[in-house]
Image (cartoon, rainbow, N blue to C red; front, top):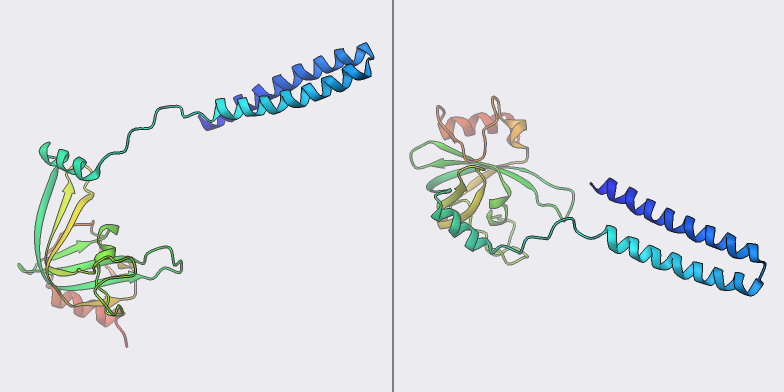
Length: 220
């Protein structure tokens, strides 16, 4: 659609300049120097107006922009429609995988494995928890943007959209829990099918998983 708009704008300007040029030729045939100067000035003004009109016409939005949506109100509406599922979790330990970004404006990518109180393991991968991850390198419990670092923690809730499976709310409660970090992407360390964000992993204990991961990828 944008390509068509550009072509139409170009055609509009081309036709306008062509007609103006033909008019100038007619004026020149009359042989009046004063009339010729006036025609040049008029042509200059005409081309400027033509450019402004083309810019205005072909940069108009094709559709009206939707009014801004109050996110909290949208979440409440989804809840009333039964489109959300909130799940409470109780965690005891965690392993963080992190790929440090070389761009100061881009957050490090992170993945988490959390041992839950029933000994299953929760896998998390998404931007929604990044700003909340506590880092011992920080001298306080808030980062430079003033966001409290409160995760991983003993109790937290994740509210997901049922159809799209994305997180609409992430709430931290309880106490911070210790975690260990591997400076690798999760995909580099994980053997087997890569789980999806929010998957519960069973069949291996957290201790077994931790031992295997740190034996291969931990500090020497």
